[in-house]
Image 1: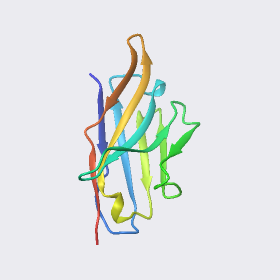
Image 2: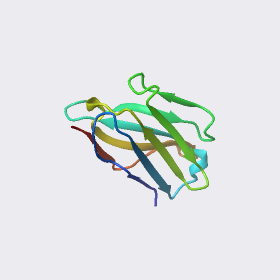
Image 3: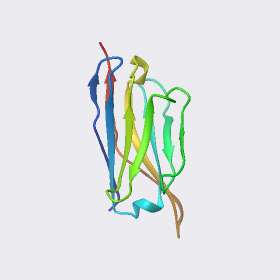
Image 4: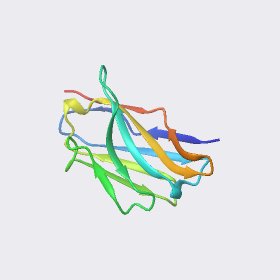
Length: 120
């Protein structure tokens, strides 16, 4: 059974930091590219950051470059999102996604998300 479970969200003041985690199970984590998405109230879901299966390449949305860092630990089946210098507009539900190729084609698995609220 495939599972992606996010944690680490919460309430933080502007300028603060949070570290999100996403623990995967039920598939070969090291074979999958991982990414973080977010969806703010009333807005479409957007890609925040992505990392390749071996962790050698990353990419970020322009809005978070220099503030957020995505990383992964394949031994722990976990992907992280370190968020610094948080802004009000970073408030959203953050979800992780796994994407990989299988005999059935490309598969996407999603977590349920964790809420990040940036407020003073």
